[in-house]
Amino acid sequence: MPVLAISRRLISTSLMLVCQLTLICFLSAAGASASNDVKDISYWSFPDYTRVVVTLSDSPEFTRNRLSGPDRIYFDIKNSRITNEVKTTLPVGNGMLKSVRAGQFNDSTVRVVLDLEKVKDYKVMVLEDPMRMIVDIYGAKTARPDQAAAVPKKRIVIDPGHGGHDPGAVGPNKLYEKDVVLDIALKLRKILGEDPNIEVFLTRDRDVFIPLDQRTAIANGKNADLFVSVHANASPRRAAKGIETYFLNWTNDEEALKVAARENHISLKKMKRMNDERDVLEIIKGDLLRDNKRDESLKLANHIQLSMVKKLNSEYDDIVDLGVKQALFYVLLGAKMSSVLVEVSFISNPVEEKLLSKETYRGELARSIASGIASYVTSAPPSQPATGTRKTLAARH
Image (cartoon, rainbow, N blue to C red; front, top):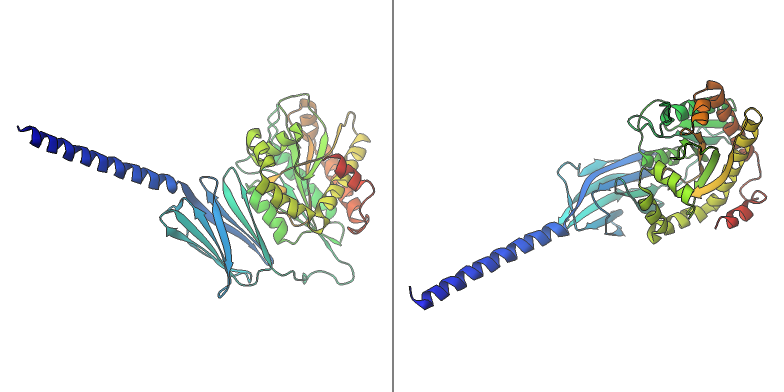
């Protein structure tokens, strides 16, 4: 075969290989550019509040905008694709939000559209495990028709942690946190319900699993004045014991970060990263400073902690006061009202697990939490902060 023919064939073969490699690289790049799957879209609707949750496979990069004519908000999630399982149109029709729509806007962008009706404000935050983008939508506040004119009622939402397939912490003798805190919450509802000026709601009243995002949504949807999440603590150190109460804030305390990581169902490494992420902290900072909510949550935590320690010490020996602490708990994030998370005892400690297994101890815990709530409700109004509140807060920074 002539040398020229061989050369032409080699050149032709090389060009084909280059084209194939270029195509492969292009397809790989296209696949990589749309690597974030939109896996699910859901919402929880209430008369004056709606929470929309977009579940993803990876951390989202997105832009947002609000348009008029008609009024709507859209989110363009970059480098993403929508999976076939996602329901692309969700009718809502609650007077605030008409519907939620989603679709593949272009090869690498998913657009999520919220069709609005009467919306006062909205905010967005991103949380992990599962990765999700949360949009909280607020309507104009309306007076509750069942609220007495002369004597305003307090609405309190009690949140028994875990439930269903999530047992929470498990004691050395197989006592489940989910069962302990549900019983305490049921007792607490009964005690608080004896006051005709208090309305009490539970996020769950049986052994079912409720996502953390939904628990907060229930409290917001009920237009609650207080939100109290009840948990039992745990530690790898079996000797760890005591009672502590948390409010939402950032922290560098290692033990508080460990507790928050466990309750948030994420690793300590992710918890620390979240504690340092500027976007998350800005959302929380703006949320906490609104309507004096951080000070009021701290005040509520102090009332409950003091009541638990005082009442239990009068009945039991060696009740350890671990104090009031702060951490970034998902279940408190986005709550519009004063909110706390109570760790009633260490279920991982054999002695405290035995106490938690007793009906009398759980009853005392419920009564002491109720007493702390009552003390807070009847104390100085928000315009008159409790003595020592700001000093305690400053000391924790």
